[in-house]
Length: 121
Image (cartoon, rainbow, N blue to C red; front, side):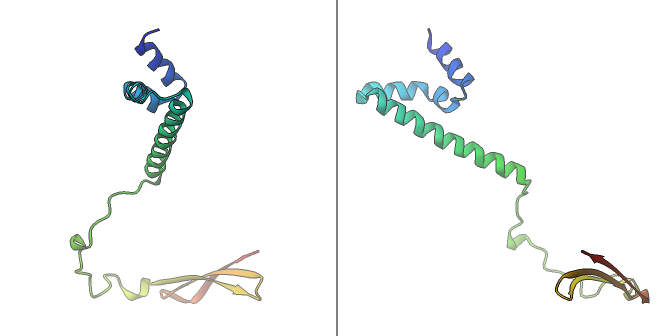
């Protein structure tokens, strides 16, 4: 069996870090005259680190976090006035009634006589 075949078998088993650093592992084991237990401990440590790194990369990719804008690049020129007419402002919120019922309400300045609310049980 050649080194290439052994690397392919290691990758098929899911030991990608071991397959990638195969030459380094063999050289270190030969140089230090490590026992089989020490070699397997080194392989286990290498695989644990690689799996935790890949897991972190996978979780970060799933969060879909973009790069954050530095505070120096932030646009601090906020508008001083609201650019819509005040009759289109809508207030929404939730509240508790009697401690056991929760309501959701909506109040619009355009229709001050109308209060919309939903009762959630």
